[in-house]
Length: 219
View (tube, rainbow, N blue to C red):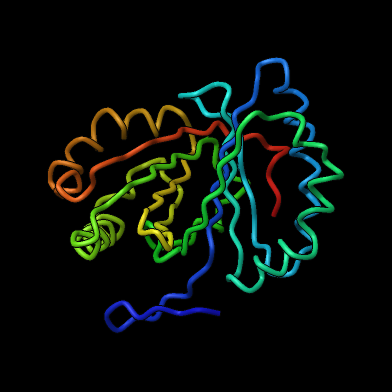
């Protein structure tokens, strides 16, 4: 398993897989049924968990977040089991567009692992950030500081930060209710962004707010 040193601590690097699918209105039910077939992931070596649902901001977009032990486990799954499960689900006929991005999970938001709360949260907030190369070190430090100090308000269960090989970042957080998330978004997040200077490092941020579907959860 890959490891990274941050200061004196050693962080285990897991993989976060972020999938977005565009689905026509008439195919949403078929897509949802097909997504339930992926419960077979629980039998795959190195698989740790998966959650997903429909994007509140884009009602015809599904978002799925899965976590893998390491790159070796994920590659083995893609080579040996993925196509069989995918074919069995017949999911390809249910969406019009798909994007798949892989991120190394470099640290948690707060003191608990996001995996500990798979199956417990109601909402998943995901932000995808593009950061200029010469500002990535600063951006990572800002996120680490926020995760340790300011980004664990009431209602946030846990979260994780990930980085792709291309230098893009993923910020995922789980929430216990819509009310808790909205209160954070309205009252706390703007001040945190201003204080941290995150906008000075990022030149593009896209966000998704996923209403989690219990039957899509695989643990």
